Image 1 (cartoon, rainbow, N blue to C red):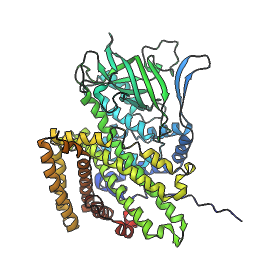
Image 2 (image 1 turned 180 degrees about the horizontal axis):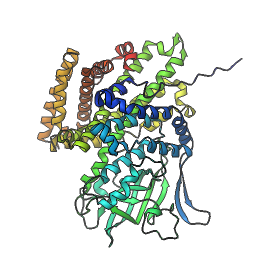
Image 3 (image 1 turned 60 degrees about the vertical axis):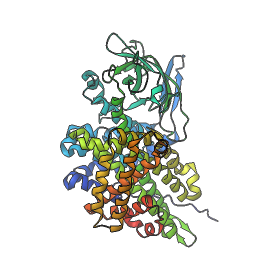
Image 4 (image 1 turned 30 degrees about the vertical axis):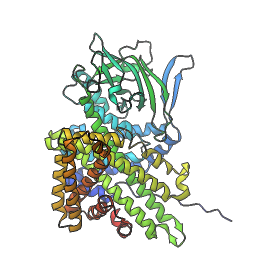
Length: 568
């Protein structure tokens, strides 16, 4: 008797098989701008479907290891990573996944929309990068921070070209050393101290608890300048070289790939997910550091330049993972036979997949909008975009992070028993998704950030204006959709006015998560409406169903089943 073997599902090409991505680029870039990006995107998609998918599997199968001592007893603190991880690193450089928005050629072609093209690259690259998308995000954040005019030009010229290089032999990524065990997201409890040296550099001493990309040649670390006082505002960002080659404190006899003097890797973290990504606990003992801006000026606001970039990357990773998980689940449903026929023909299963497609479309629009705003801030210094980004960045991150986890759980379930078997690679979807609501601020931390933005900085104004404009755009598409969005807009306008009166009230603080999610869901409706009004049928279907699902809390399964092919 022959043994049945389930065919392995193969999803569509991640670029040509994603109509929402392509229509979004057509609208955001214009036909000529999209045409200029197609070759780059098609090349990356081909890499993702071939060698990078294999590299992803290799990196997952061979997680990083820490070698503390060489054979003769010298402390080396070397992080060894797999060939697959190195292949992902090289591909990120070669395809300019970090570099693109900083390249003069890209800005000349797309202007502020270079960030839109970068988002498309991340959407293709991230889901099967073995979470190399995390070092990519931190490298981008470090590049944005180094680009600030208050950063010393010599420091910028020494490090920024390496972060945005497209030659894998010279390109580097960055770590991010902010979290400390006693504080976590409470940066006011940070105890790492910075002391100035005679040559203008600094020396950092402290303990950093969650340092991802521990093998990166540099990191951005937060430290409290000596005698700066208490609280978080006075913390300053510093660039810390990871290896002896970049530290002037290393003697000539020290190997270039040895750890920089004063940088100690205590251990690698054993995590729920992102297992290919080396994350460590790192000690600093008078480690050489370069200030990024004047440490005498409260520096947390400078560090937020990095955080905004990494938050929108987090949203992209969530949305991209949702889209790729959907592609795998749909391919499996087409191949899988169940009682009564093919799984992909079951109205029940199709309704489940259709609802997931609605969520993926909404998450994509939310992340894509954040990248578009970021580009307008960086290239055009657009004050309206800056005001809107202040609230959109945390909203996009918190909403997509939660959606990514719930969707990943459904994708695992969609594969039945095979979804629970590590060898299939499906469980990784859920393990890796769970970091997304945590890194760069949990849902509650971000909800409080949104509350601060709307009460202290009037960041709710740009959001309400976008919602109101979308109501008018929705009216010709669907009166019911327009009415729903109008009602929620009025509701949010009243709620935001109330919370501004006393933002410390128990009811306001306790309800901050619900308010932030409501704002994010309304914004997503508006963004889908905007794309639908441009002429995209998929966005129109998604907007109708998203509003019913997340604003009116209705069951959309029957309509999601009917529209599954249109929803992608």
